[in-house]
Length: 210
Image (cartoon, rainbow, N blue to C red; front, side):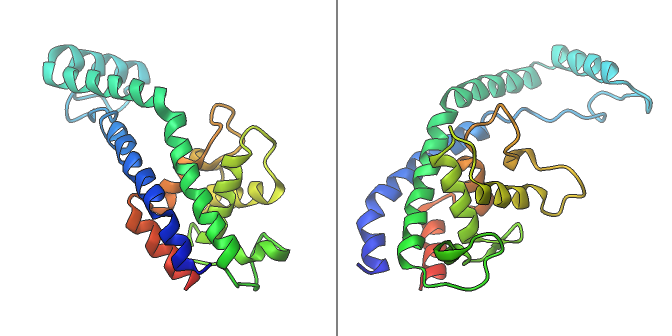
């Protein structure tokens, strides 16, 4: 089987996954609350968090349009939260197809920062957060497929590098495997690598493997 044959055989399924993904992007977009800042309700320079909360509540009560947008965002977030696992499943399925393609067709056998042996084939692709795209796909797929288990050492190391990239101390919570209330990270991984539509996926796969 060639890469083209592999991509063609999965095209319908992967396109449907990306079409489904668009629905969740819309849910997220409608769950973003309207902004609130001191220009909307002047605050003293020494204002406490309690002062800010009171100012927000006053602005909320006095401006029906702002209140309506806030309530719509709250409803949108509730709907998304109820469907978050489905969103992560779709993203994980996309990562699985990409992972398998790299596993089959990558001929790379050079330096690979974290992975050794046959897994070095994943050290390919454009750099994202300082790492080759293939490594991020590898870790994202493995975390998704084994989310109910202790993450493998390589997966932990790759997520650690992603989470601390360009940060002076601390970790980006979107990729911090130590957070207890987040089980699956596949949706954050897909967002990080910028795959929003089918063509984003195919361009990177072809660039990596051709």
